[in-house]
Length: 595
Image 1: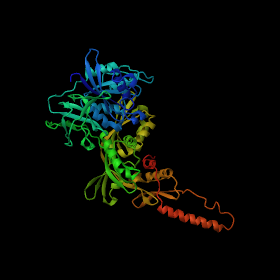
Image 2: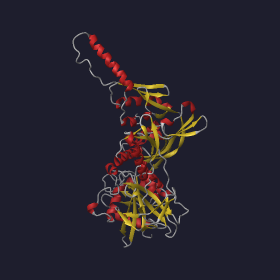
Image 3: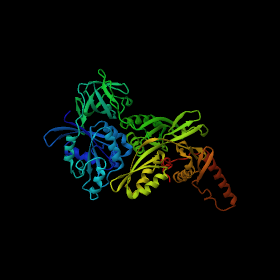
């Protein structure tokens, strides 16, 4: 136990976490040169394609320090995007220390501060590292005071370049000297924290864990405290980064186990595992469960794929505990699920993983946030989709979720960023100065305004320099109306959305105009309308594809041509009554991304 160190790397997105993890693994000799590749811990194809970390990954390393002692280091690499902060909180719960990485050219950003607060709340020892010092754009005179403003002295900050391998040995020496060894009792009843899991078709659910008390060995009967399900351990191992089987793991160690667990619902991330015969009466505190911010309907294109989609979602939720889902039925799309996500990027990633890893074709409906509605008979209900909104005469008051947004920008961009936040119905709360050229703006904003294109617009008005972090911050009263989109006078519930009354008219017009561009022309005329209740507030027509039926009719009286035109008109009318309008996937998201 004295020679074990558990630590993670935390930073803002794109500050070099994965590259630093690669260099630490390389320095410790865990992987030989032939098998080494960049983003070694990012084992998902999607992570490599996008160049971001989506899942936190663990690896066990052996390190000999300068004084000749042998140490076991358990490194957990974490994501940096705000949508994956749940993964960061899981990693922090399993560690005693953290490396706080700051890009020497970009400086302190929103997620840097958010992750540092999380680490300090958990009582972790934090070691600051200034990365990318080899870049020509690195500005140490500006960035060092920003890091010092977070509560570090200049002597504490390590100057490094993960790409060039500068400062890696100093980082490892500081880890073994400053991060405390794990505390726990080998002889106490078993207490193991589950921090991740995934489904293997041969072995069942594979559980990743950290041992806090006791010892777990192959052949032990274990129990999951949240579900009460018990199993016999069939295999235990550590990640080096390949899986290596061992007979047992004890206090402070990180590894995986499998026990022929075939039902994904038996395992909850954040649960405590104990022995069946000698259980503990004190489950470990789980980590802060983050409520879903965005809800959208997910439906299979082929209705026969519904059972496959349900299985896929159960297996995916093992690997991504922040993803939640419940069955839903839609008149336009049939049977599907109402799914909760932490943000728009999280939604995009889940859709891609379901389509790639499970071979499904999916339709996603317009995303929305969770509103609260108080009805005239005093009940309070949660409205996650427009179809759940009660009729206007039954609604006494409606409330929308607000967030507390921390935006970090260079001082020169304060005016355009302030204007953007006010345009999005935001309220300014506070301004904090970070060094001479940066400041932190704290705004209270409606979540519905943020989940769509706020981040893109923020990057645009600040020329890419702004960074954003946010957390849910209660509800406020709003006059909410349900906007129905009618295609040929038939409501399309998948395109409906909820909107504040003051913005309803302009939003309805913009959506109808956008759908006119996106819905392909059919063989019959399509009318696109936006309605609040029975009142139409915007309308557009999509012209039908034309066919010149009189092309072969030449000579003779004009009445011959008129007869053919009348016949065609009758056919188009009948087709309009019976035909189905094909709506492309982009149309569902386009209703959100409009100015």
